Figure 1 (spheres, helix red, strand yellow):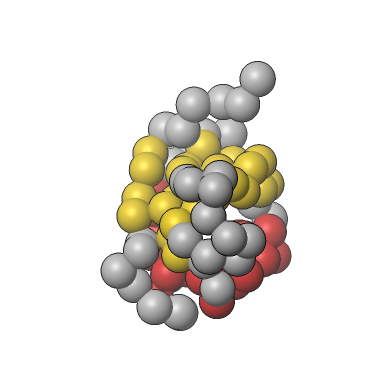
Figure 2 (cartoon, helix red, strand yellow):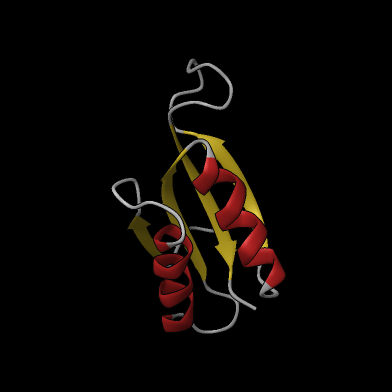
Length: 84
């Protein structure tokens, strides 16, 4: 079962690199094992945020589109990241 997020942030109005900067700052406020859910746009943010979080040592639990009917690689997605 997927853990419930401890915190949710929305970076859909941000552009790279601010999408990851906001994600990183939110992760720093969590304790080890807590889960951050990030709402972000497809494209560059969807590629960079999970990659950068994993490079920082965090665990990517889930990446999914908010609208499963949206064409692949488009729309808003939600990523769950466990702080390590």
